[in-house]
Amino acid sequence: MSDAALDDLIARLPKAELHVHIEGTLEPELTFALAQRNGIELEHASAEEVRASYTFDSLASFLAVYYDSMRVLVTVDDFHDLATAYLRKAASQNVRHAEIFFDPQAHTSRGVPFSTVMGGLRRAIVEARRDLDVHAELILCFLRDFSAEHAMSTLMESLPYKDWILGVGLDSDERGNPPEKFAAVFARARREGYFLTMHCDIDQEKTPENLRQVIEDIGVDRIDHGSNAFEDPALVRAILDRDLGLTCCPISNGWVTGGMKAPEITGLLEAGVKVSINSDDPAYFGGYLTENLQQLAAEAPLTRDQVLRLVRNAFEISWLPEHLRAGYLAEVDAVASA
Image (cartoon, rainbow, N blue to C red; front, side, top):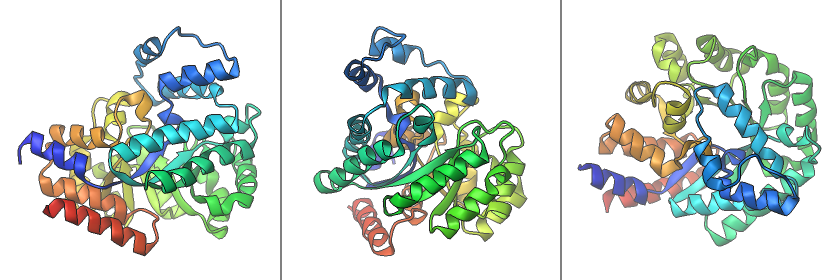
């Protein structure tokens, strides 16, 4: 299949996105609109200046800009507008299901109530199901550079909203913040009925040990990023034995390390690991889900069969009810065979 034909197939396929941070979809244009609405002064004079300033060379350098930008998110309407903008973009790329990360501690720690965050995001999700035919759910992420006690209090604060939250995750700076730090929090989250996932960002300190902890000690249901597992056959076997899916993000990989990790992603795929492709923080890294698949397809390069497996994997490792999963997979098959 030609590159153009494969790109066209990727664009037309129904897709699921399992690794996208809603705060990471805050485009500079919306940042300026919200800043004006809330009377917040920004460092840069235009959206173009903001975008030109994105020169990340590590996870830490990205996070510094990422958290500073969030200060424009203040009201229920701000969070609604942020999520609505992402969901409209997702709909335009044939994303049929999205499991969306949000970072409540990044907002409550600066005085924004938990209820404000939830109210805005939930309203956008309900509207997207009605108006865009996009099914979306929320995953609450704890910030690993905050204390485990803060994470536990945030978990408790989430319980009145359990019907609106599908699972919990762990993100932010991994340095000195191993998964085991949050073992008690995740054990309680499982007892409360939440699905579990954790970030194991690429090329971080002690990544193999972090991967071992999330698999063996925490017992996650899914791993975010995790492509470094390819470097350790024992980790690959453990992932296969537990039938864990990985949510990889090629474009963001290229911003914080030397490349997309295409050999690792395709190697894991061919080893039988249920790898999926996602956009991570697309407003900062310059590519939503379709672009991530297309750019990986060009760099790897991917075959048509590999693309279809990646797309199917995302639905298969999602936390969808079985009847919805089956319906979306049937849609994938219909486009693939057309």
